[in-house]
Amino acid sequence: MSDIENIDPFLDVNSNTNNDSEEELEQALEEQQHKETRPARPTVAINYQYKPGVKTHYCCQIDRAIHAEGAVILITNAQKTTDDNGSSFITYTIKVEEEEVKRRYSEFESLKNSLMKLYPTLIVPPIPEKHSFADYATLQGKAKEDVAIIEKRKRMLQSFLNRVSNHPQLSNEHVFHKFLETGVSWTEVLKSRPLSNLPKNILQGSPPNLSSHPSSASSASSSPTSSTAQQAVLPNPSASQPLKNPDPRFIDSEAFTNKFAYHISQNLEKTNKRTWKRLNDLSNDYAELGAIYNGFSLNEHGELANAIEKVGQAVDSSFIATGSLTSSLEAEFSEPLQEYSLFAQVIKQVLKYRHLKHLQMELTAETLDKQKFSLEVLEKSEQESKRMEEALAKDHATQDTSNQNTQSNPDGENNENTGENGHHYKHSQNKDLLTITKSHQKRRSGSKLFSVLSHTIHGIMDVDPEATRRNSIGKTREYIIQLEEAKVTTADDLKNISVSIQDDLDRFQRQKIRDLRDMLINYAKNHVTWCKKNLSSWEEAKVEVKNVQI
Image 1 (cartoon, helix red, strand yellow):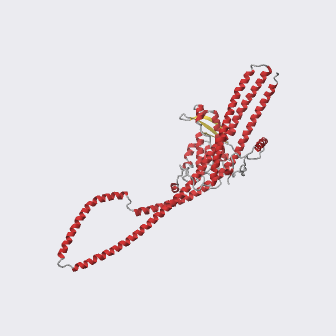
Image 2: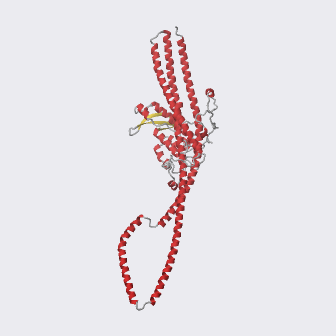
Image 3: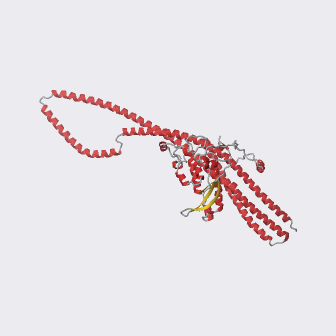
């Protein structure tokens, strides 16, 4: 049973760490959890020490740089740029060691889409979504220039690049290296191999990254695709069509992904957005309240004025601490949460691709069975036709023999009766010949119209059904050969696709648990820091208020 099938997205994972504060936080969280009654949850063994094989061969300098120990890709700047046509956009400066390159959001988007086409069986990290209509409405068309939105997008795009560079297979793709390389035109990369060789429909062929399925991460650039003949016979299934023999493992994976997406998107992310908004509103209220207290202290004198001023300072401190809390929560909790909401959509796309390939295999097998049945019917018709031709040939031979015997016997009898009636007999023959000649002339004149109609009908109808049937038999046999090859190819593809997807789901599961653990620890740390700052300032205010003499 796979890791992804049994893990609950909110399963608590205990892990040793050298940080004392983290251990204290974990112990406190565990004590709080033991006080609550919760149903038992399934557990699995997750290998946190899993590491891909060490890479020794590099295709370029960027490849070597991103695989160096401790390597991090940074987005150091985001600035407004104007092109030759006067259109403005934001460019992001990417830094890998000493290399720097500027890319715009649409280029990040095309990189992600290209990786999804090259690696349809892998979970390609998501990028932040485009601006919503709400953003444009709120900022009155200047959402592209809003500093907060740009900074958020900068952080999430940086996370995307580092997730790709840490992926055991995607990090080896030379298309990704070219994206990070200085002086490379991304438009030219999109027009060149391997991207230019990809089919318009990725279902029409084997996955580019799985020519044969090794565990090693080989670039999809050199992977062959299916032959043109096989692509022509492969069906294009609809995602809404159910499978006849679904794989239980992936049914469970789909159900788990839907549940995970619901927990993240519909529950946790929505509630977190409301909480963050209220904290932000609270910070603004603290700012206003602090100014009111400070103004109020100017109207009083002595110890009371000092106490009011100290309370105002405590409120100002709460304003600063709450603002710091909202900023930290957005970067360390809300954005990763949004990222995992997008991850769930990517996993759905990967599972949908496998569903379509499985459906394609079933439809190919079904079409093959139908064509074999059609060939059997055509061959039986051909055999029946041959038997009928042989029977007709024998019947014609028998009739010819009988006619020859009939014509020879009357001649012998008539020779004996050529006496006085000979003249009358000849006259009778001449009369009969005249009648037959007139009859033939009438038929000839009437047959002209029939011949025209017959020619027209023969142009529409099949003039030679035997030849058409033999032609259909030949085409059906050729089609069956193509379908049999396609059936073998789709079966092998499905097997390799299932292995690849399952491996990446397991990798993603390990990554997800580590990330969620870090997110929850950061969430707790930020609140502890916020509480400590508030406690310190309010303790000082409390002392000052107690000094007021009544």
